[in-house]
Length: 257
Length: 353
Image (cartoon, rainbow over all chains, first blue to last red; front, side, top):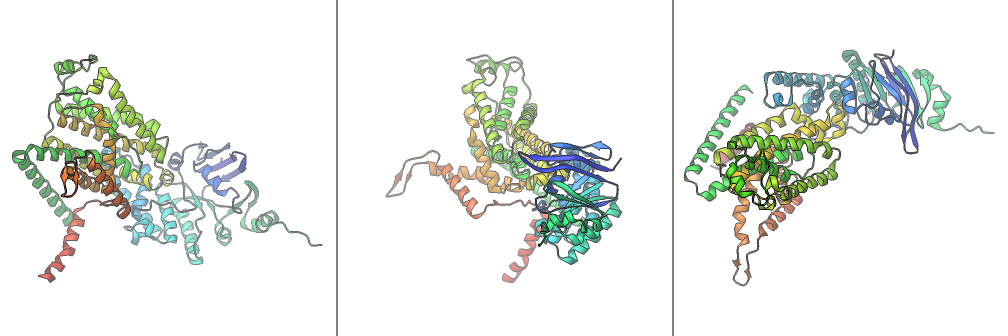
């Protein structure tokens, strides 16, 4: 049985079919890309997997459990973390606090023992702080740990969001356009980062991205959506040469008589 | 770092002792009026700091504290009145059993007020946190009214519009400031803990908070119930300070006062709530003169009750225009901050001399 699978996922908003009959199976450790033109339903798929939408049809299983229709926080606890297309940090909190909040869902201390700072909580607070610091080192933000997160430049905010997602201890990481707005050098650094994190944290990665160079370099498999329907699936090489994909992106090739 | 910690502990201890000495002097030599104002300050600190937990820290704009204060005040008053006193005051309809026979010490009644109010807050949380934003404000405002109307009509429990009279004036400076200190200690620590961080996360971005595994609903409930507990205790202290309570005391006006305090202090800042609670409570006494008849030579103004509120509203408007984040913003008091501030002032003093 696959590590993660989505079967016949569908999402209807009133009369609009945003996603239809979406199938996806991920093996442990894979990096898979989800691409498609704007409005193809990629983020809708993420929102269904991560618990922001309840799918109108289909089933999602993860690590042997049915997680269809579970709430976002339960899905994160089950081991799926995500980042957002439009960065969503806790803007007025410091960089390290943002990451420490990621650990909150795993703490064992009760609310009272945390408020009264009992020994168990103090140890956990210490673990959270050192863990957060290590994650910040991992993504290269250790020197700005004390700064307000909204003061960071765009590229660093993206990396902070990844660090925050990692703090929740995920097995599957969903990245929604991680390279958006980055220059080629930053994109290359991001690529190295994702590959390193996969190895260090034993991750499986599903990502949405418009930067084709990035997608073709990093993904082992790619799935292409258009108007909510899967139009192609395969290795980067196969996708690049698939006529339906080219048509979806560039429009139909009209034969010139 | 280690020495700073030591220094801060000493400073805290010194500040506490100084304040205790101040309270002792006030208790021994202060006039009734001064003591009354100090008691009011302490109670408003309790109310504002706990209201700020849900409104400022967790960012859930709600308007129910008058309900919580009412529940706390009635609970503790009904528990400390003697069975005899209750029999005398409930003239229209007799008080229901077991309330008619229960009589407990003051401190027990305060804790009971907190627990009962927290319980009501907990129950109320289920329906109200199904909505957000403006809707939450409206729903909680409705609950505030519901509690007041119930207090007005549930005669066998609350004695209706007649209210409860002859409540022993147990609240003194030690009780009020003792509980204010406990409230501050508890809530400040809660806010600094991991649970407090989770609450702040919900304030800044609820969807993102859910994405890192925070159960937004339960954390809102936690903030709301904790807030209710302390509002209840504050209500109990208030009842034993003014010794007579009736439903008219717990109108939306009370909530509005607290709202002014927490907004003026800076939503989300416990320190700000404390400062503003003292300023507003003290200020409303200082401004009493504006409600008296005034003779300005060419113009004679008769005493207009409510003039103070006009001035407060005006100050609030000015705050919203010029200092939207209030006195403290979201910053908090810390000894390190104070020491750095003093240090930064020192050299310039040296130069001037």
